[in-house]
Image (tube, rainbow, N blue to C red):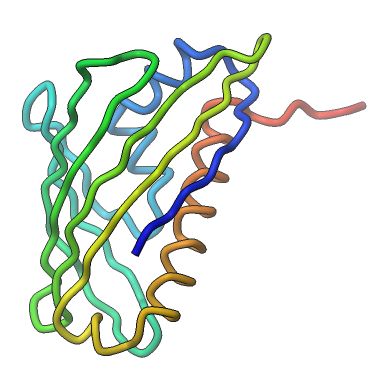
Length: 151
């Protein structure tokens, strides 16, 4: 399964990059995230509870960051296990581009699933992944660039 998208975040690039490296911001942005801990400069461990169709599971996993091209681009890879529900592994390439006072974030992600999750069918998995990605970026944008109240 592959996902690609771009989102405009109303914050400068350096703030967006810093937020993408802040475990507290990420934890608050990832749907179903119960725990997110930085174990080294380029490794995070997470516990996330997700419901995909009729399957609900808690996944424990590890994410590794490659920041060689930072802050303009970086990549991440990870894998997680949800016990009998199955497993997921994949990665994403992220690119940040300044756009005035805002930032354009582009990503291309690939993922593979196995176990009960794989039996649900690629259409359900893809639509759920798209929905979760949308929720993540909506939450992330609100954390990085809170909407201003109009009086």
